[in-house]
Length: 333
Ligand code: CP3
Image 1 (cartoon, helix red, strand yellow):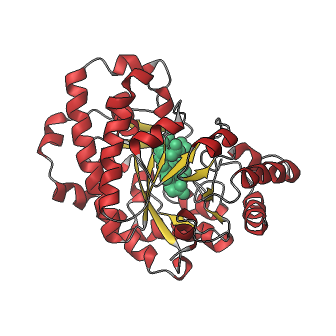
Image 2 (cartoon, rainbow, N blue to C red):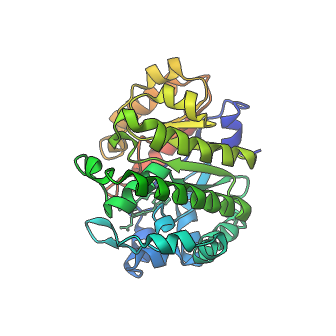
Image 3 (cartoon, rainbow, N blue to C red):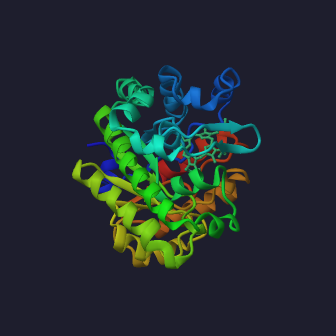
């Protein structure tokens, strides 16, 4: 068993840690590769470079897992919707060709993302991954739906407008769920040992629509991962009631954002908890970081807990602060 899986199953008292966006712009070695590869999608589809980027943080820090370097928006891309990343703006998606998506089969989809699966296979073989988990991931159906309809990162006011054409949206959601399963399956077959489902925009949806867009389709994916006998972590960022989400969706691990009270979560949820610390604490001073790391570790002491942040590492983070964080977590008694 790996350290992370022991942590999930509460088989050890050793603290475990990995970070969302542990590979990324805060690392100079990532920025170097990125500056030589302007097209972000192409970089994600370069199996040698994406494998290399995946292990970069493991060379520096004693992380207990790697997460494959890729992006949730590769799924819309493989469904035939153009995706590009504009500097200092974020993702920009093109028009949806619904007929093309209806006619797409699993083999064609898989072919388009072959380099991702090859990168997972390659990464698994690397020395840096010995006895460590390799986390595969997808965007949750709701978050993928929102990107596909909104064609860029959404703001609050965009949502109602986008949910008008109900019939079309329901058909699109079905296609998304179908191919997210294909993507999950391919990652597991290539060697991913845990799957994380990112619902980054869960907080934007009106509660009355949770069943349809969040609970039901996500539960479908969670059951699919469980049928493959590997753990599934869900991160419904900004959801109003984590306890209800856990009861309905039933992931193995729930990843919490930095706006929720960890004490309340610890008192009310029985499954393994992950994350929570505000990534801004990695930008501040060491004393403040230490106090807040200790707060999370004390609250979750004796319970199955995976140390992580409440969202990804920010680009302006000093890598030496990440080093300090990992040491704090590993040495906390
Ligand atoms: O280390 C890791 O966490 C693995 C790689 C990873 C990336 N994206 C690489 C990336 C993962 C797990 C993701 C998930 C992802 N992608 C999410 C869910 C998590 C979250 O942040 O909420 C979302 C919403 C996306 C979509 C996306 N990709 C956006 C909005 C952006 C631009 C803004 C930003 O945060 O940088 C990206 C680009 C992206 N994905 C970068 C990286 C390292 C930055 C690329 C660059 O500009 O150099």
